[in-house]
Image (spheres, rainbow, N blue to C red):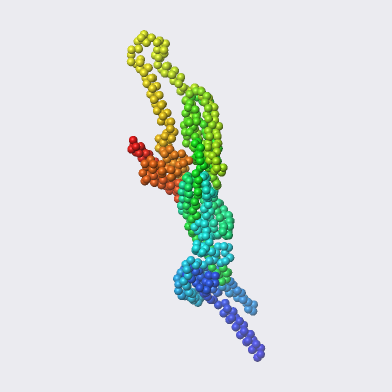
Length: 619
């Protein structure tokens, strides 16, 4: 009897343990609400979380489509756990999954969420309250986020730190220039530097080009290819140079550089609290439109007095000459090449008037310089070749003088001179010499030989005929006509500036033809170089303004003084701005070249017609 009672108690105890084990591993779903970083209250704009504790159910919950008073940000599984139980040698397993619903409060009020059903098991419901909160009070990331916890709105508030440029404490742009005070035409370096604490930068693109007021600009390709780290205002940032320009001020005074807008795409970290894993974060795509700070540069005029033979070059230059041979024939073309090398405003260097330096027996023809420029990290360097053609007009020994290149060196603050060597040339008689022409004329007219041997005209039967005297009259008339024409030619070309002014339209059209060729070849940079050269060259020649003094202000004043109407001047300046903007804009934003070319031809032709009309009215 006692044994039977003992066995019955053992069976009942075992059954009770098993029932307890089954009860412990029963499927369940439990919901709970947590606010960010343990805040008791949830305000409009705050993040908060609803956690799903799912026990012994393998089926995953459906993603919610609507949560009262809140916007759904994320829903994903954030944790799992398992547990093993052994009773009398029998092992059982239970498991649990955690799903976190990240929400952003958007509406005030008292709200209820749930219940939800997962795998046939129904959960509880949860209540939460959303109260009013200033829109600027955004939740921040946990303290252990390595300096990335400050929100953008807090940093842009009046109480937050101030950063150079328009951005926020986690990403902003800072513009710098190598000198805040410089001389006219001196090369300056303008850079745009990116500062960021974001984990990943996916895209950086300029929506417009910087606005350089009163500068000639060369864009440098020397920008950062990798990130570097720098401490700024006590905070460490990853930095990169995203834009670099070499700029040349064209006028004195306070000149401004206005920063352009960049679009930057990054991954921002969004933080939430998981009951199992603790504080966690997920990447969130973010796009920022950021503008660097504007700059003001004080530009000084070049020191006075400016040498009369100043080339317009500001930088450091050297000139050399090359003459392949020193023996020539009269009326036979030859050439001498002058090469200018160095750094600075190389494209605007001009040589002296060689017609005034060379002997009168050597006729010199001005060339178009061939410039090869390299835009580097701190300056523009390269070479400019001037291939002068000349023609000896008569035999003899002549001296080609040395040529001085006078430039201003901003480092020393002085005008300096580099000299190309001169040459002594020997000119022999060419086929087109004066004596050979005379002999040819005598050979063509054999009767003249007879006249030369017999001065008794009355014995010659041809003396009384008109054709006989015509042989004497025609050469005299030709000689007088040639003399008059040559004197008029010398008078018309005595003033070199006047000659350039008359030929300004012709030279500009040649430049426009080169621009048209570049347009057909889709050589965008060369096209805008030729367009700007055509416009500035035409204005410099037509208005008789040296290239070193050529700028928008001088051109406007000179055209106004000439009587040009304001609308035409504004159209000209607008065309220059459009060409310079298109030249230095990113490739993706460059305008179609055909309208620019048509407008350029129209402006130059219009100016030429206006000049002619003004000249006629003055008569």
